[in-house]
Amino acid sequence: MAMLHTVNKSPFERNSLNSCLTKSKEGSSILLIEDAVVGALKGTIVADKLSAAIANKNVYVLGSDLNTRGFTEADILDGIKTVDYAGFVDLVAEHSNVQSWL
Amino acid sequence: MKFTLLINEGPYQHQASDTAYQFAKAALEKGHEIYRVFFYNDGVNNATRLAIPPQDDRNITENWAALAKEHELDMVVCIAAAQRRGMLDADEAGRQGKDADNIHPAFHISGLGQLVEGAIQADRLITFGD
Image 1 (cartoon, rainbow over the protein chains, first blue to last red):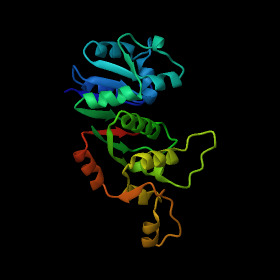
Image 2 (cartoon, rainbow over the protein chains, first blue to last red):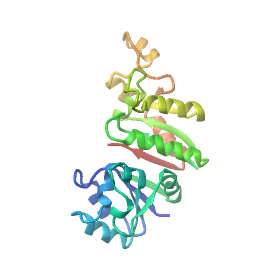
Image 3 (spheres, rainbow over the protein chains, first blue to last red):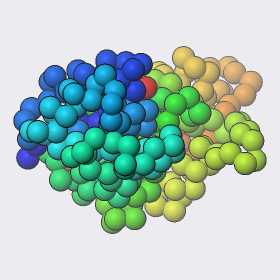
Image 4 (cartoon, chains in turn orange, brown):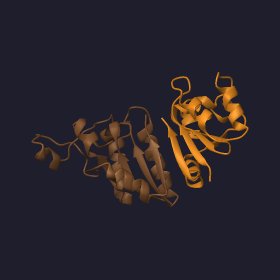
């Protein structure tokens, strides 16, 4: 089973999303939570890098954290799936282990 | 499935403790087991029984305590991290000659071995931090 990576800080504040995108393997999954949800938005300087990751990794965003910050699914890159906390739990269960990029 | 949660961030700092709490609630609702919640580094501050957040705000410590009571959660505070930050239960306060204690009774103090054991016994270890 593949690894689940979680990122919880904005890519405009820290480098953890970039580290995660660089180090995570093809077929693994990345879940953006908390302030990291802004990394999923269209038209930012990290959008190209994230779009490239979507081609060979599963990218998810925690919907409630996205909505809390005033964004909706219409604002995020195509190919990123939205999950709720129950979906977060399922992702943890479905992957062999979890790497939190702090 | 059994989960152990590691919380490294204090309450009302960013969002880690809130995320961990929502995750724990969702996991329990789905029938999973929370084997242990381990509070480490600034995360030990989640265990204070003296916090008084505004009435229209969430009470993070009481939320954890209520969830622990309902599901008999094992909530462990790292002793070394706690003592550095002035977090003491009544026993430790007595032992250290301090005149006050502040750890909520829903939490208990133990060592880092409990994190290792929690990681071994659970199917997944999930870290929530800063």
